[in-house]
Each structure stands twice: as structure tokens, then as C-alpha cells.
Amino acid sequence: MELRQLGAFVTVARRASFTRAAEELHLTQPAVTRQIAALESELGVLLFDRLGKSIQLTGAGETLLGYAEHIQRLTDEAHEALSELAAGRAGRIAIGAASTLATYVLPPLLTRFRQAYPGIELSLRTGLSARVRELVLSGVVDIGLVTSEGEPTRTDGALLSESLGVYETVLAVPPGHTLAGRTRVTVDELAGESLLAMTEGTNLRTYAEHVLADAGVVVSVTMELDSVEAIKRMVEAGLGVSLLPRVAVATEVDAGRLVALTLTGVPLPERHIVVLRRGDKHQSGPLTAFFTLLHQ
Image (tube, rainbow, N blue to C red; front, side, top):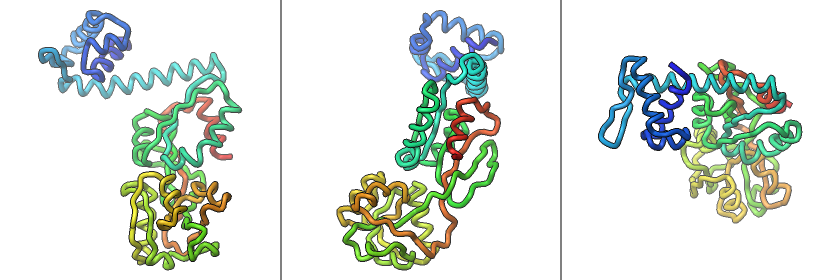
């Protein structure tokens, strides 16, 4: 079983076509077909069912695919580790981050990292925290940044998790609001307010619901949005108030367009920024440097 055969097999499985796989691999279709045939002959099983012009994985093919993808990831890690020895600071870091963290926390950090390590290629994938967790577990990204209620456990299955600090949530109100002259507000005082909230399923929406429910406060969600930036604009327009990360409203607060009130009487643990990584994944030199920056 050769690496090039496994590579051809994974590509054919992913593209569901010998022709498209050959194009991606810059080989002829007969060459790809021969590699798959040789692999099937060595293993003694059929990996694909040929159904006219279409193909699909057999049960044996489905089983092999998981192992083949894992072997490819390990091979890539081996090449990366060896190339670091030869090239010093050259390399690549794949980062996954919750959308709000990617927007409001990562930019200054990545600027500092790029200045210190200009030869390192950075790749960033964003999404919900649950999706970022999946990307780390599957090895698609090297490191994940998510939000979590309370401090995480150090080890969670294959994942290592560590808090980087508190991710404070505040009440954002427009300057003309009756609470705007205050610096603090209790959760009870939110009763009757028109709340602008993120869509269901996001960590921010879940946390807001937990805060209100645990305090026994009934608040009407008058508008649901899928963007923190959109929520801020709506609050500025006087359409309601919202529970948002302090870091997300810092620019508007400094400009006098919003007022951020510290929440008191919150019965829940504080939200944290959490870094995730696989415990069995090689930690490259660039990744170690990035971890060091995160902890500064």
C-alpha cells in the first residue's frame, strides 16, 4: 500500500469521479484507475461500485477512507515537522475561531504575530463555537478559539482546552436610553426591555437566555439577527437593547454611539475565551509561538 495510491483513493472518493480526480491530481484517468486497481488487488476488496458513469464507495471503501485520511494528515504533519528543521520559521497555521472572536479579538493578535513571523502562512476558518470544535477534532485546523460558560476542563476527550481569560458580556444601550447615565445595571432591571438578540444556537444567544432565565426575568426578544454588527446598528437606532461582548462594542462606546453597562447579579459563571487543540497533534514551532502570543 503506497501513499500515492491512498492519495488517489481519497481524491476519487472525495470527487466521486475518476475523471475529476485525475484532473485534480494532474494525472491521466487510466493512471488513476490503475492505482485504484492495484490497491484493490493488494487489499483483496472492491473499494468502489462502478454504476454506469457514476461510482460510489463500497463498505470496504468507507472503512478505508477514514484510515486513509488519517494517514494523509499524519503524513502532512511529518512533512511539516521536517520542513521546519530545514526552513526555520517557515510553515502554516490553520486557525478556527468563533465569528465574534475572529472579528473583535483576533485582528490585533494576528497583526502582532505577522510582524514577528512574516514567513508563516495563516489560514482562518470561522463559524459557531460548536463548528470550530468539530474542525479541531477532525484535524482541519490546528487550533480553535471559542467561547464557553465557566472555565473549561483541561482535558475533554481528544481535546485539550484552556481559558485565555474572561469574555465579559455587557448591556449595550443607545445614549438616549433611560439607563445610559449609569455604569452598572442588575439583571432584574432588564424586565420589560425590548431585547435584540443573536439567532438561536449561537453561544451569545444561549448565554443571554440562561442569564435571564436563571434570574427569573422575562424579556421580550423583539428582533433576532445573525450579526453582532447589525445588532449594534439597531441599538444605535434606538430599536432596543442587547447583551453583547464588551470588546465588540468598544469602538462605539469610545465614539459615544453606544453605552456599555456592567451586568450585576448574574447567577451564572462568566463567559471565557477558550483555546482548543488536539492532545495528539504535533505542535509545530509556529504553533508554539502562536500559543505564546495568546497567553501574553
